[in-house]
Amino acid sequence: MRIVVLISGSGSNLQAIIDGCNDGRINGSVVAVISNRPDVKGLERARNHGIEAITLDHRNFDSRETFDAALAQHIDNFEPELVILAGFMRILTPTFTGRYLGRMLNIHPSLLPKYPGLHTHKRALEAGDSEHGVTVHFVTAELDGGPAVLQARVPILESDTEDTLAARVLEQEHRIYPQAAGWFCEGRLTLQGNAALLDNTPINTTL
Ligand SMILES: Nc1nc2c(c(=O)[nH]1)N[C@@H](CN(C=O)c1ccc(C(=O)N[C@@H](CCC(=O)O)C(=O)O)cc1)CN2
Ligand SMILES: NCC(=O)N[C@@H]1O[C@H](COP(=O)([O-])[O-])[C@@H](O)[C@H]1O
Image (spheres, rainbow, N blue to C red):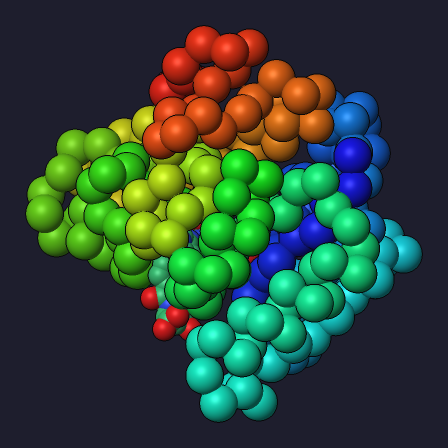
């Protein structure tokens, strides 16, 4: 399957997806990487693997709608079966999410539905939570509200800072995102209404 990955920064999840394609865990190939921010490390990661790396700077557009329309044109040029958000930091419009409904995944650094949005590690620490984690979900118009596919739990340690917690969560991200993408590329993972199905059975597995 053809995969287009959207990024905004470092691209460590992009790297995990590329590695999954290269070692056979994902029956697909990343055909393009698109960043809404210029000169980010994720674009370098793409180029290091001979993958087309495109910058579509959202600051050059006068609205979310015009940015999303241009983004969709770029994506559709590559005719992907799967669009992966990997640290992509723009809220997408309903028109855009509707266009890729059922074939767009995101990874979010919290145990959704807890802490949608930003600054999740800080919020979990400030709440005094004993555990945190990460969720892979289908992308819908509702921000971080799409059906969950996979989750991984991470204990919060007394000594944790935002950075140490984020690093431990990131390790789990790199583990479960290739698993979810692999299921999709095998045709096993689908979106039916507001439910994620694996082999036609409702799923919300914690790995
Ligand atoms: N319609 C949807 N759009 C996006 C989803 C989604 O599920 N539905 N997932 C997000 C990813 N995400 C968290 O996982 C997320 C990304 C960005 C933001 C946000 O508030 N962005 C700000 C800009 C922040 C910045 O540039 O640093 C904004 O867009 O104004 C919240 C959550 C991707 N989009
Ligand atoms: N709301 C989206 C969000 O916060 N995504 C998070 O951004 C980081 C990107 O890292 P990466 O660029 O190294 O993959 C990851 O922790 C990812 O979960």
